[in-house]
Amino acid sequence: MLKVMLKRTFIHLPKVGPRREAHFWRQGIETWEDLLAAQRIYGLSREWINLLKKDLRESLEFVADPGYFGPRLPLGEHWRLFRAFPRVGYLDIETTGTFWPGLLVTVVGLYDGVTMRQFVQGYNLKEFPRALEDLDLLVTFNGTQFDLPVLRAYFADLELPPLHVDLRFLLARLGYKGGLKKIEPRFGIHRPAEVNGMDGYMAVLLWQRYQRGDRTSLDLLLKYNREDVINLEVLMEQAFEMQRERLWPGNSFTTEAQRTQRAQGRI
Image (tube, rainbow, N blue to C red):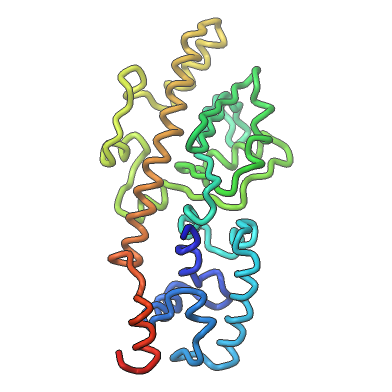
């Protein structure tokens, strides 16, 4: 069941973009199995159909491998694999310094839906790369332009999971633009009073105070980072459902009986 979204996706195939994919859906070719069973597809030569079937058989062989689909799907469509590969990590970083992307990474927060882990400069930050080894997909907010480039610059030979969803851009496609703190209340997310209203600049000040010996500043910084991270799960779940509904209104597949009737030319 978790692979339903993946098996309704065709844009990882050569020469298949969103318009061609939608063309398949309109003809009742809703899953890989439908295409593999198709004898004819309007607008496609038999040679092309055979090539698509060859690639789909390969896709079935690698259906459990996120590393296969990551480079084949446009980055903006990685959201489709959110449920197909459930080993997800929600990530946000805190930094200080003046040169980007060569900033000092002070805190990395990583949440897998069960356990929240935080890696702190001068304490356990070096353990962070190992924490990514068991993940298939990362979820960030603006990670494409900030978090991931900074981490790549900071950790030599960092290996990131093969899939990445940047909620900033996925939510913007759904009409939710602006920063994370602006968007959260629109999804019913309200931060605890002690960190409500804090921003990245305040996070820098808290780190500086901690460096001067104020341990409570680090505790507050970690609470702030935790909110940045765990709230991504709620946003990802809802954005996934909204975008899925936008692509496939009603969220339903053609029934087996309807497929049989279509194949017999009755509908």
